[in-house]
Length: 277
Length: 277
DNA sequence: TTTCTGGTTTGCGTGTCATGGAATCCTGCC
DNA sequence: GGCAGGATTCCATGACACGCAAACCAGAAA
Image (cartoon, rainbow over all chains, first blue to last red; front, side, top):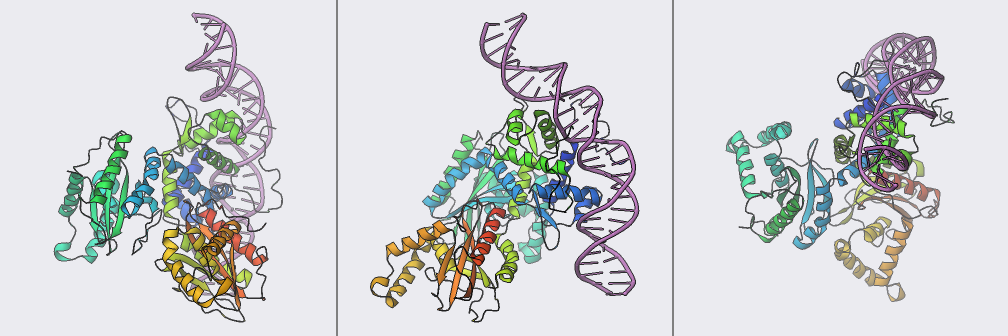
């Protein structure tokens, strides 16, 4: 036999299967996306359980479609321009995102702070849009950046509201790194993490000061969807001391109001704590 | 004949084609992403020039892979959860600087000119990488240098594409210095600045000849990110008269092509003007 | 209700093209 | 030069994607 059926006789399900080549191809594409960078043919083949020659032809096809790209020098494969467009289309079809994108410029305008939107992606909290402001100390943040759970306000919110199973891996890695740097009583413990979670849940708004970068402070607020699911997080960032980073200061109130309004529009129960007591 | 070949006999390119089913499937996926929302089978089929039955089996396959999803009620197709992950992965892999660094050596190699990459830093356009070539009159440029807005092609591009609030301070200082040196009708006025901006925006490519240094000429092209934001500028520099510095000369074309390609890879719509009219 | 109409889904026979395996060709590396 | 380790191509084979047409399934009109 030359062709191994991916699913033996399509048992049970009566629905006739679609073009199976495309299904395997899709899985292959997803595998490539799951790797952490450009990968060699053999790596991809092994990772997806295919023979190199089979994977090779799939990869070629995906390149033809522009979904993958092949580095001319090394011959390694990576996501292509069309995949990016695809993803941007997918992201902008999420209703919460569309709505949040609309209010972001005004938020930056009114607070004078940089603001950004992040969503939970496969590698953690991912920045999908940021509005830079004229800060005296510019932040180095761009779309696509993965935010740490412990060191950013947005990360704290995801930590508190995403299911533990989702955050566990990333969290473990970050705790490990944290404890390499911080010794003694500053070590991060399970209790410390629980403390972060509960305080974030109680306040509704999260804050970090001088963690990822020493000179900036973050304020972040969650936007919930209709099932009470955390859809995205809005963050404002400013220079420490150059703005009022209090939980009840004007920027925090403004931010909380925007997030709450979005949650309400989306049918979220706006279960956040008393940001404006 | 039952199967219509998508590409007749693979003319010219000797490279053996990859799995062609996957290539057509990819195009179909891209078509769905290009539509403005969930679409019916027939719509998609028509849009991509396929028979419904063929499209149907592709769509089924794409659903199996999770790249598409089918609304249970209406049966319409839309982008699926995996496409979102794909997009987030693609976004997080974007690194304008790293990508630009990769193409810089080739640019220098092919044009024989020095080339450099600059980004908008806290003090203005900042050189982050410079490839020196064997120019008869070497340029004195190193990483970290701040480029003037008025006297360099790269600066002109930042002037035209950065928000005014960002450039205002630096610009005011430069105009002041300029008008100390240049008197009479060579003075820099608001009209002169507007003129620079509009011409740069229209051409897409900027040029300065003998401004910062008398004997060199600069050509610069912008690289835009997916939000239409200017991410970085690529400049080539040569000795005046020793190379073709025309807007439609080979170096300018080459430069514009490289910048355009980068913009596309970054999800930018490559909306730059007619660099090669 | 029946009929119609526009769309989706599924059989069916055909023959194209994806497949596994091995051969071949690179390209660093010792 | 010889030697991996990997990328690419060749080849015979039969599994499966193809076009076509029929069946099916709404909702709207009659």
